[in-house]
Length: 233
Image 1 (cartoon, rainbow, N blue to C red):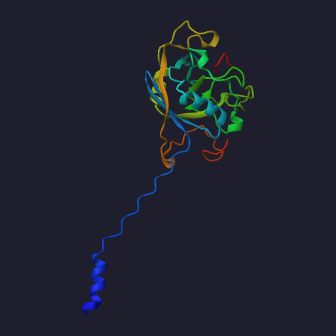
Image 2: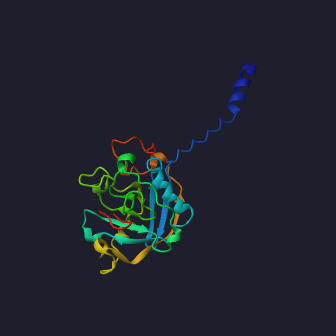
């Protein structure tokens, strides 16, 4: 009897098997960028697979640190609550500008100019350089297939995922009553709000990433391929 118990006692004395470490959650593959401004930080997510040309241009300014010092200089409060946006870009040394980029219409990317969208400013399709805007309301008239539009629209390439309150502060900031030409008069921030730094930040786990609104409902899953004056909508 005793010899039979010995193996059982030996098994009982063995330490429990070590627990296997949990597999880390896959991160959202899309780049995230923190824009640190005078009024706080706005974090945007870049749709680099859907709008690769526009995304690459924006990230090039970020990665070379040329975006540091760009200004949020425009708030469209004079347009009323249906067309709310803030606009930023290089308001200083034009030598910092990279060449203009090809236009990526929303009909090609499957993105849309919804509340929170990050879109490229331009005069004509194909002349965009540094200027971009953050929408604080839906402006579907900026989409390429908008009725009565120019058929090109404005290229969406990302959206706000954090710091919406900061964007609202910029929108509500003081403006000059006289600065700006034509439709921009009364929209120029005074003082302008400086982007102190623009840096990539870690992406959250894909399962926890904000859903967002820029991807059209009929488009594929996230991550799949894809009348203005001056640099403005």
